[in-house]
Length: 284
Image (cartoon, rainbow, N blue to C red):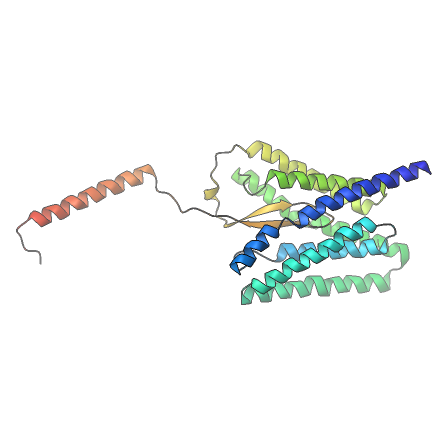
């Protein structure tokens, strides 16, 4: 009995820490939406990351409500549903007509139709403990599939040798978040919570390793063709996405040889103009 009590205490401790860190991650896009609010425009931002985060929170919340003793999963994913709904509402309010229409269609397809389909099928086709298992493995499958985006960012870091779009602090805290939720799942004996966070921890460590390797790279970020850079966000409970961050790309700067050639051409033109001005001939 004492051992079970210790397991429960550790689960609560790691769950509370996981909640705190995940709340900070959920609030990470606040500067982005403050920018959208100030400019009254969504610019080049996309709604997909926030739509995915809302669907993830809803799915985990449904799983937590069906599972006994998962109060800490309920709190963080309830918070996530509220925050992501606010983000999506602001995005739709300030988006252009075409972008707004696309965002609404995606919201209806993913967070209304697809989630309702999951809700109906799991409610009527499976019962009791089997329903919890089915929902849990759905959550695992979705969380693992979301990691495809961070892997693409990792590949871009290796290709460009630039870590400007993969901040170390964010990678560090998200790795810690994966550790917290893995420990929570372990002490709660919940494989569906623990398993995805193993992948999150591995990818988080990979990001920090790449940061250590390429942080002193001299490769200029202006060579990147993209006008948006992705910030990798790894978290299986709560936000699991890539947050877009605007990049101010400076125009291409002429080389020294081009400048010299331009100056010489300019001097030659000035001499020609001067000689024409001194000439007594009439220009026709």
